[in-house]
Image (cartoon, rainbow, N blue to C red; front, side):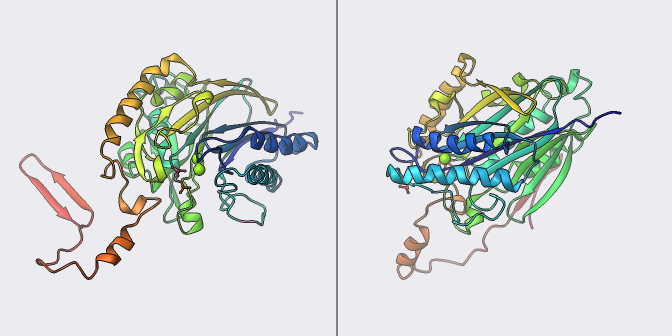
Length: 393
Ligand code: F6R
Ligand code: MG
Ligand code: MG
């Protein structure tokens, strides 16, 4: 009689519960406090294994267990770990203590309460390598570009062309976080349509990726946007992601390769600026320069019988030195724009703005000087051989 193999769940749950000296780094005592709660949960058999760390001012809980995604007990454990870390944070008088814990009452699931969550459940392969990405001072859509390159760009991922197990392509589940809707799209067939959406990373966010040939889960991204949860902006929703690698999935090197390009993401100072995403090892995961630039850490683990073996600190490697140098150059360049767009985000994306109060103050001083223009709408530009046609709709 064949026994069904048990499933393993990995849950990466993070929250900003306060920082030492501003918004740049978690205090070690907060990490210790969260670890204590997880150690208790491990002793009780609720979680199988855990790893606690921080990336910038975000406390990161990497948890493995057998309880599936969205499990009330696991979410409660994570919530208690954040509460305990926030208590220590308050005791030490840390800055913005308890910032992401938006509610005092836990009701079965941390989603919607402030913490960011990326979870997936699978039957372990004989060897199960995964990469956990954790970013600070940016938003979940920051993973759109690298995820697309990993799972849909053959110039990044050689396996899409030369490995028969990847050659069928991947399915992308994309969220519209404004409308609260999701759509599943196929790569490579629909890559132009996929890019038409995910090129607007503040709204259309890659949530999950599946291998098309057998629907195996390949990747998951946290998509919480604190601004939308609270109805107002209460902090950047620094994202996390989990990617499965090797043997039928992209190789670890293919998974890391997109981060060799420090692409521009939204976040940085006051959650209101574009800046380069700098890949760093854990020891450099602290956002000091203009509260940034935005950082991303990649930790590699093997999962065996739901135990976490590792981590390997994957960006702590001279192979990413030139990326970091380029990110510094880009940071220097874009900083010189000061308060001007496109360094500063557009008004609808800013975490802070004085614009309404400035406009209010000036409302009697603005004088009529000409005809009113209709506010610009979405522009579609059609290029043909003969002419360039411009229409608005
Ligand atoms: C961005 C971030 C920081 C703060 C900035 C001002 O996500 O956390 O850049 O926005 O340090 O912080 P407050 O308003 O707390 O003084
Ligand atoms: Mg913060
Ligand atoms: Mg943060």
